[in-house]
Image 1 (tube, helix red, strand yellow):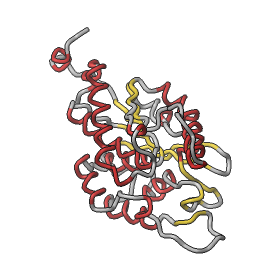
Image 2 (tube, one colour):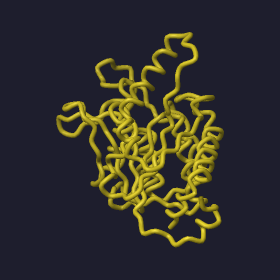
Image 3 (cartoon, one colour):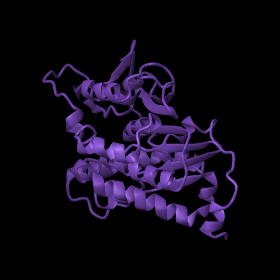
Length: 275
């Protein structure tokens, strides 16, 4: 096996590198740490695909926001908590407890052109089409805010996003690691799954059963995408935190950074992907 120093001196391969980011709520802050580690090692993906929080973080990265800038947005309460992005309404005749106005306004503020084509990197957003009960990839058009909001539309929490008579919700519902969305464009795909499968030690409360059931569903629908990744990084923040641990963003970020750095050390051939 080559030493890491030997890989740094090797010629850079002409490869298109993709980055696939899973959903996972607050656990998705680990994506920011992974991106920072990749950047520190000179690995800069050109194509990104994501579901839910992976779509949010991926879109900001595709727009040119650096990991430190994303962390600052969290500190500024813009990407801090789900409740910060929610506007509750009392009506039971809506399709969710909250609309997407704050999230869409945030995307407009941070990415004024609101266009997939205007992004620095190619972004692919995974959503679920409820009308046909299938996941879809959105990658073009001038409604970036709409599709990012749809991808993060947690069922029952946020309203569905509609286009005509078609309704869209969270991409993680049917495909939490949508590597399929960039497979035809990339020679190499780096996947980041922040909800790796864990055997429950003990289920003490109904919420525990619900959480592990949802995770089991997400792991199952991620299998195809996981198999398509040439490298798969699995930050273990889930051992200490959960999908709503938004207060712990700094620690979750560090889980991502440490996991990616360790993975690259164990797979030094990744350094051939440097740009």
